[in-house]
Image (cartoon, rainbow, N blue to C red; front, side, top):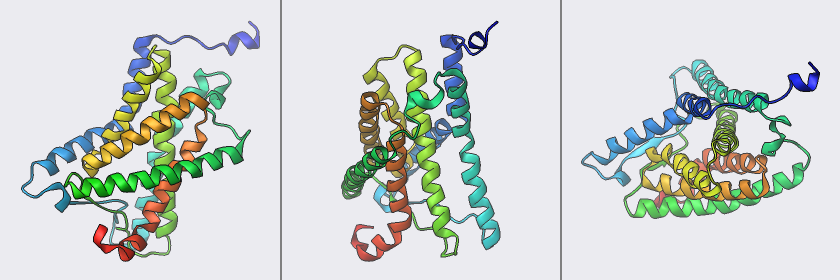
Length: 259
């Protein structure tokens, strides 16, 4: 048998694809979605309103600085294993590998520019949705500066932002879009269903978190189906989260009435 024959892509049954999707989500964002739904039910059934409750992001994991750093780093590293898993799956089943997702460096400046533009638009809109939801008592208070002021706090926060960007965009956009297309799902069915999923694992933030991330999912999904480039969304997501995690303390000090 020729090398080309050995490298041919073997068709995968619909049942196997469905099982694979459930397993991938079960060890990654699907698990986060279940926890977030339970969190929302918990918050919503308390006597205090959602707006009177708070959620801490990037919280300290130990009162000993060295071990706090180790736990933080390990948490980020292990959260990236599902990303490596979907990259491996798509690499094995796709030809030419990940290039069909727009994961290459043929147009780095265009990808970077679009990512920055998306970050500005989505970031500004996200702030508006968050403040509106807070005013309507539909969102909890988000605290993104829960790490002590250690020398490694900012690098860890930036790594956390990168972790979120890679995990969400590679799994929700790159992996799910590829597999759901193979299951025969239509364009807008994929866009809307994955946007709902994206919103679901942010429900721990309240209803505002769901709405903001649903809108983000629709915009990212539509652009991805139109242009087929994944990297701009990774850039945009990283910049949004990095600005939130690192800039939260400054924004809280400058505009205390909003927090």
